[in-house]
Length: 403
Image: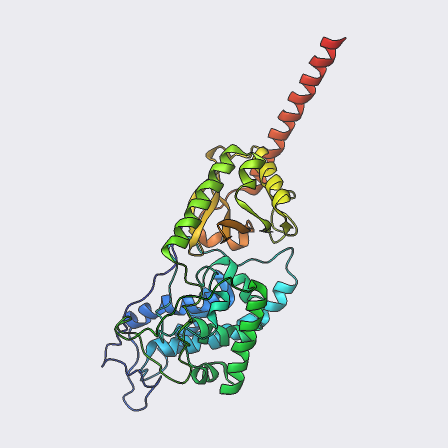
């Protein structure tokens, strides 16, 4: 599997160190060198992917953004400048993508990132106010979080990500989006309310915290303004080490349940209102993906057990999916091997509340060799025919014995 880019370190431009006071400055006519552009690529991708939820679209945006950045003279704050350019391009791409996604066959899920994920250098190192409303979510690259972002308009998504995730003050977010500071504040607030309605009320207030400083994030440009967070606002969606340990344990138990294939093994892992969602995009053989989400502990457990019981020539591999513990579904060598799909999990209260599977080949190509789904389906049909023949033979034998 290919790994997405990792977080960059401090920028170098081949000239004097960039001033963080503004994006560009007239006069010298210097341009970012190849090393600086290479350092900015992961940051641009991290911003674009969060905006779009699509690896392919994000890579196209990155290419266009870096081309524009390379042609800009006297860039004094490369990180802020590439974030601005990337976000503006991504807004336009997202507006056209929304039309395609409304016509998508079945449920649309983000393209999964597998392995270490591109973290954002916290540009402003500033947790945002009211983020406690969705603090129980996983990190901001998780499938659950990106699905929530799909409920926002492109401008709301940009305002929310810039302010609540990246820490841009509303005044600077407004410049990026191309609106007024008041409008940017309203967009972020509206986005926050929509997310809060989806997530539901939190059971307890987060512990008190303080604004992160330059000392905690050396090299990260600071943007102090009136949008400094309230003291009780945590970083958006950041899970603790114990949260991640519990998620790892649940995935281990889920993997054991897959090996057992028993309904009861799944039941003890699932919340009452668990939802299983599949994304095949209409690009997989019939019967290999669910057309619409399935809800309810018993129903989902039975469906998972039935899936395992089909005896498909496949196995599961542990992996980080969207930065969270997940599973890869991989075809066995007998049918040629290759990736079938990914499972990501949403955890709350020590149980699985969401299972999201991506099997659409169009969303998996960036991860490496894909399985031959037609060959896999043929193997499933052959196994089903063999089981049916065995049952019929047993029934005939029992009838002969009785007669």
